[in-house]
Length: 388
Image (tube, rainbow, N blue to C red; front, side, top):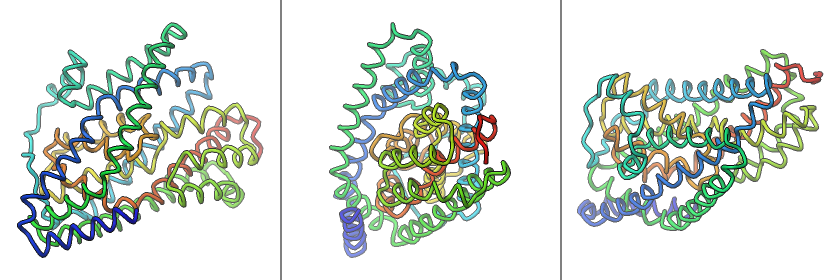
């Protein structure tokens, strides 16, 4: 965090004092972004296939498993709605004056959009970086692996190995993050002026507003409506929330979340699948942030998105965000795959990385809190011997 903030500040000062530095800084920033883009296909394919293949056993849980899926989808949809409403209402990107090298694309017809969702060749889709085609293909293959069972085990393990290699690759790339952020900030300030900094400050404030609004409306309110005593729930949920908030790591908060929710009274069988699976499929704080980041960059770059394009962005993010929670800086991998399709400049991505440390605590905290709420709400809904 310290290195990123220092690099961002140095880049901003350099761009302000010497606007001509843009000529040198921009290639450095774009090279860093290309490194992120280069791993999109293996990350998406490996993680999504493995996630859906391993999650295929939900069908064995019958009614409870179906209710878990419904809850996850409703919760993440609510998070997306809150993020979209806040970013389109507050318009934090207005006036930022971000310029990019990608030209806005024309809005395709509905028929063309539907046709382009499905790949004729997955290798061609990977070469083009067509994220929606990669996602839909990977989900279909993952579900097919789950249906095949043990005969697909070798292939699923290969996908898990591919994911592990991709994770390590991202860790190497992120060691260059300070250089990429500093260069991107220098290029942005040199080309666009200091309005970019004001826009980023407004984005951080809007992001916190949205995350807190979702915490109240998307997490606390449903528990209250289900008749769950909020004080008793918080007494058990505050420890995993504090761990996630302080470490900005969902993985670090999983053990205390499992322990505290079991103490609270959630049936172990339900807790054993709902909470770990929710880390991948119910990452509400992250998907809210993805929505806000995408629309913020569109506002900052002056890219006008039609209602159809906005709907496709939301659908793409909802599908793409599943199963990638464990990737270092997963948000930026997802956004880097999305931006080119809608004429959004990748330069905005590097600048968002610079302020990500200010947003990450509440985003990760909401991810864990959503996954503490989910098993409690499902148990209450399903009446699984869960007396409150």
